[in-house]
Image (cartoon, rainbow, N blue to C red):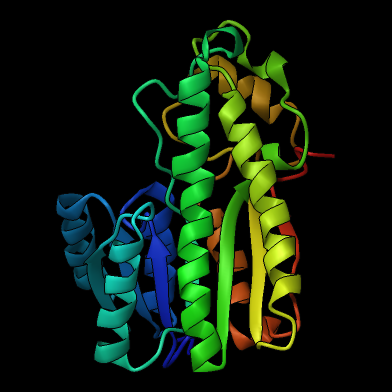
Length: 259
């Protein structure tokens, strides 16, 4: 059994989702304490209970969290500090969006564009801001931001041909902005013993059309589209002391898609 995260308390926003739940499982498997911090209370509790049955190591907890609400964030920090006496890391993984998200460029309204930027990138900022204040008082901390290949390169629009899918403009702006926010925070916290890094994910299999998967895979080097489990090793590394001098970096996990 790996002990890389023993005694570490890790908060994962959006921890009940496809990727977040795999992240939580990895923390447990490495004997850490994981907090699934999610807006969807029902899904969060179900996910936590399932993981308790699957993994016998580590500790799992669920906390309701709205990343766009300062009081909600402070409440979670206070609860965890009283319960565990420390918080080692924050994984910004949630992806809130409004009901109109995902429109083609020409159909996106100004209000929808602004709202999605605010609730998503704004939520990452607010959550990081409040957790970092706690980390400063604590004397250490670690933030991992979950970004995307489309924060690194321009969209490959051709892979969406003959599908109803598109690459939302808000997504590109959010994920690229998140990468620079990562660099900004890592420099801002110089001397505070707080690390901030990002992982830029390639496409994750999630019932996409066959034609899209084929088009996407043609641009990769080996596997093509990834499973959520393909990302967990990189997260584990960044959460562990093995990466203690990696700071302000973006690690791309995409099977060569961005080359």
